[in-house]
Image (cartoon, rainbow, N blue to C red):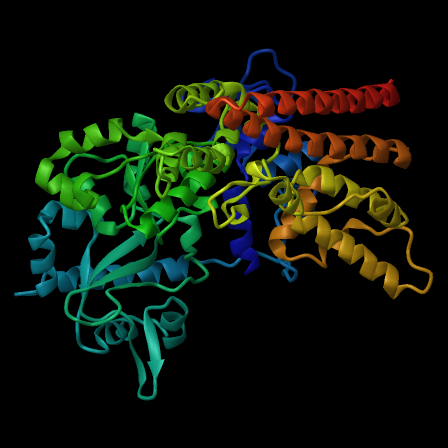
Length: 602
């Protein structure tokens, strides 16, 4: 990744309110956050942070800037060290190669894209233009076409190339921005015989284009390739027009296509934007959350749309948002629906959008025969991860609903949720349809892939980084690693030890990080920054091992509670008594291990 792009992406991923809020007590004040300035002494707050614009400004001393500038000023760091500090804290990987000197000026590229946008727009107005006929047929007014700067790419092979050359644009610049392709006869237009949608960022700069074929040419949709000024994952279509409405209504509706955005906007639903691609990205979710935390996903009801919604739920939750899911009736997309039924009907759908948890719970019902005990138990097993993601109040509400609907003890469901995992999956079922809770043999087999408390396993791995002799200790004490990340760290430590004649007794974090893939490296850095071993390795090991044992006991307890739920439901009294006795023994083990931990910590 180019260094200049990386700085923009860093500021996209890091929220200035979070960074400043660690050092300044901020309180919401209208569109801003207010607090006492950390750069001069004051009694009345004059220090403001604007989440939407990602800037800070003190009206008392005049200090102002973006998140990097704040870190520089507050911690007295040069630019590069401020960038490195943010990267380390947020687990963001920096480009290996970077240049010093001024940042590159991209105004020339924005200017060229603006020239191309004007060319496409002017081409739409030519007499008998089929691009204009297509847009009018789709129900767009001339005002809407003008508002969004829609255009038409002529079918002839070099119309845009010839126009831009005449305006002083070089072939290299056209290729770099993805406006042209290079063939054996020279440059030719990338977009031909297509309705054109300019993609504009929140600084009102044209950064790329989307083209929709009018004839039979393939592909049906064609987008600009990513360039130095266009990264799809950092932008949303339409947000340049709709961000104020999203902020004002405190609700964003995310749709799939350009036409969905434009049609909704024309009909008066203006708190809308589209992800540039099938699924919402982490950076897009963070960008949206600057304007509103309340985000409604409106994707198609096919498998691709469902997967996009699930991915969107995950990234919105990670960004601190509150996702809901809107289902358009009759399998229509938002464009078709609002043109047929109108604004009020669509707003009713938006108001009725279901919380993310309910969407996931409804989705999980598919493929389960809920008229049978086996089907119900399989369904309950499948939604434990969903319930675990919820806050206490919402979790309690859904557990009570499930308990009442299926006649299963809410305590059994809650205990399954409170353990890290039940360690059981559909793959563990036998051909007869029994689940692992029906057989000890199946239960042992499932335990070969137990619940993963990754933080516990990473704690072991970090300890082994301090002293590789603990790797043998893990084997002796039966510590098993099921987290891919922890296993890779242990493997990396072993490799480092083998590469040295006497084997190193410790390893630094950077050496390990370089041996991991980018996603694992990011997680590793987060754990390494938050787990503190202290001066007594052995005390840390005892405490971590106790946590490991308790986690395993809780896994087993969850299995027993599920078995107990079945026994209660089917009235098998002998089995109920046996399971109750085993639960008591497990509780004693858990209590004893907790007591040992408390004694060591005393």
